[in-house]
Length: 137
Image (cartoon, rainbow, N blue to C red):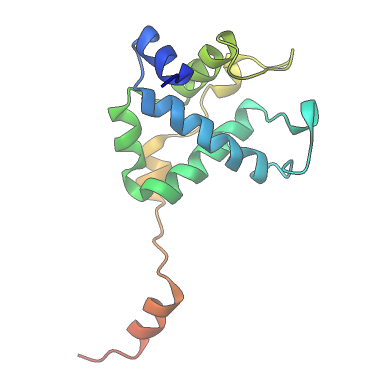
């Protein structure tokens, strides 16, 4: 099995291969959130801030309030770590960048605990939510 993301993660050693895979998956969310899903080529490019928004949205969807803990288990401690992973992937030819893209685009993006724990608002599926409304003790 040829997995260039995994090889890159293992060669670098700072971050778990899962972080690289998660980033690749979250890019689809970033493109959609930026309203660029129908775009082609350079028009589909997302900025560092847009990548962070996609990572955050996807993490909330997949991990909920445990997202910060999961990311930390992968070695990702702050948004700059996501920038480092992006640029490792760019340098390895796995992602493309624009001339204006810099790692500083990932600086001070958001606090993980604020984003995932403090502001977490669970949503119940409509069928469960409706059933709870009529329950009496």
